[in-house]
Length: 264
Image (tube, rainbow, N blue to C red; front, side, top):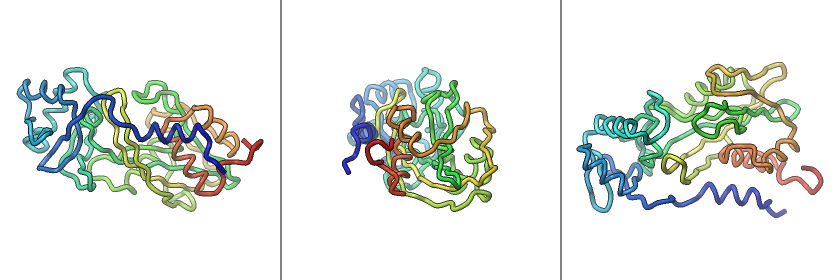
């Protein structure tokens, strides 16, 4: 059965070149991100620990240099909302070379890692969350039961445990049939720069009587949808790009998607 056009469009949107020219950003000789050359020149002129280096830009001073770049970007109103949250600066092989404030990662094209959890009920329906309306990214759109970025020095499992509690008030060890279902990488322009995100996808069964309750104020509400309704909402564009692709992957993983005509 042919893939629906809306899903093909989402897949294309998740693999897009930068909107403007970008050049490699290096730390300790390893390529760890990218930067628009006009911004690089501006930062170098401001006396920041950034210099031209073989067709790209090199950050000097390790974590202190990264902190200086992030602070300057924040002072200029560039980047996302300041979080006081350090993220690993990883190269193309996944090795960590330093830490930087989360607000700066997209401006500097630094890859992030995330964990997402698709939560199903014993009857086969799917729990989803609506992102809070004051979220800096995709406010009000629908998301997986849980989705969050890996912070500094966290493993994937630690991120999964922490975010599942913070976003849904659920303990991973109380869920059933927890299992990985693959990885997804998204590369696309975003409002504050360029997004490169490696997403670890998981599924689990939420036992009957267990209801998600947000703990960190970043979720507006939860809903539980039968599969045909989930597909209807995916097709209607009510989800974040990443959540839509993750749910589509989960549905295909269980041979639930695409449904025959007239079934969703």
